Image 1 (cartoon, rainbow, N blue to C red):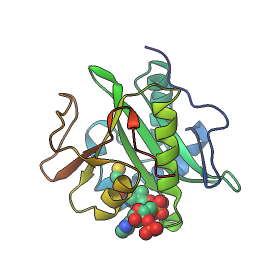
Image 2: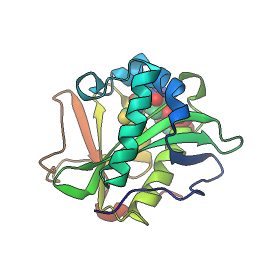
Image 3: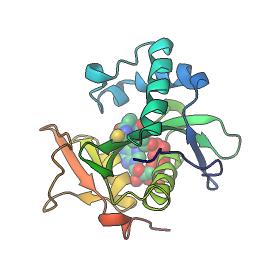
Image 4: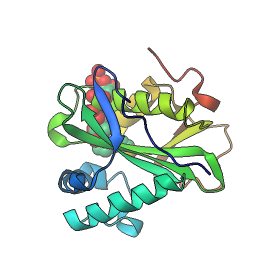
Length: 189
Ligand SMILES: CC(C)(COP(=O)(O)OP(=O)(O)OC[C@H]1O[C@@H](n2cnc3c(N)ncnc32)[C@H](O)[C@@H]1OP(=O)(O)O)[C@@H](O)C(=O)NCCC(=O)NCCS
């Protein structure tokens, strides 16, 4: 399995994506602990980001996973000044390493400015291009209509009728969405 690494210039006019750095620990800790983000993830079990120290450890674990081709943690930065505004993760599905699950959040004060949508679109371009993934999945809390709308806008659809990979985790209260194979028709630009 080859390492996952994003190019230095992965950016558009709105956002730039880069791998998490150790220096991101403070804002990652803040973001992962926002109540709306906690509600979206089951981080309590396997990813306890409850202090800058545990966020720092998560960054280094993410770097190890990226070297192993198992996933990547990316900072979503504002293109204008490269300030971090959010985070996006892609995790390869166990037993199906050319498919991945996506998760993302934007810091409270930076929402509704198009950062998440731009970041997801850019991440998909990279994932279906140089990275060579064949499909990306998302599991969204059923009450999170905004995220479902965002994902639909960039080409995801409900997974009805598509066989879920065995390792795709699902909760009863969630909606599972996926792209078309290789992201065909994912971009609306
Ligand atoms: C969901 C989230 C990532 C959106 O980030 P964002 O940068 O504000 O999103 P964008 O500005 O790119 O929004 C793009 C579109 O998504 C939809 N959308 C985003 N947030 C929405 C909300 N709260 N309510 C309704 N629609 C919403 C809208 O269609 C929006 O377009 P518009 O602003 O032109 O109407 C952010 O609210 C967040 O971090 N939430 C908590 C974590 C989470 O739910 N993550 C997603 C699941 S893993």
